[in-house]
Image (cartoon, rainbow, N blue to C red):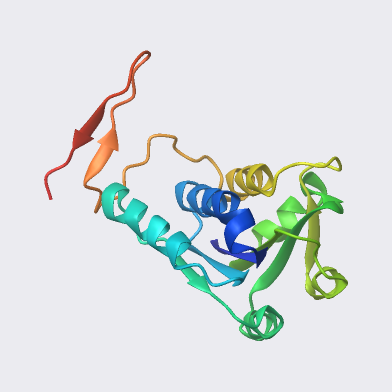
Length: 176
């Protein structure tokens, strides 16, 4: 399954850390890339590209100026639209149906999500029905949908990697 993420309503000053964390989770948990709508943010894009440069991978991040048109285009291309919202159907009830999709665009909000997103989505999915972070919801969704994730991933083009250990921190430079 190919998963891409659409982050709605990014506000450059207010959301830069959370949007960055959404991208980092997407990258680490196997999504192909993330689009974001709202304020264009070169700093956000540079931050994600810098992580790719050091830690490897080809995760992309791109700004979209017209998210409504973007969602419509993805639907026309055959992508399943999955909106993560605490108001949706619990993931276990729809997980098997979502797993049958070849390609999914996962939508997460930053500010209040317009009703048209709920109507455009093929699945409005809840990780839980209590207020929670979109970062947590995305991580759980990706883990459940992409299966048995290894937690010690090294991308082929990484320049550095963590050497897991019980105590302390150890990072190793890799020969390219």
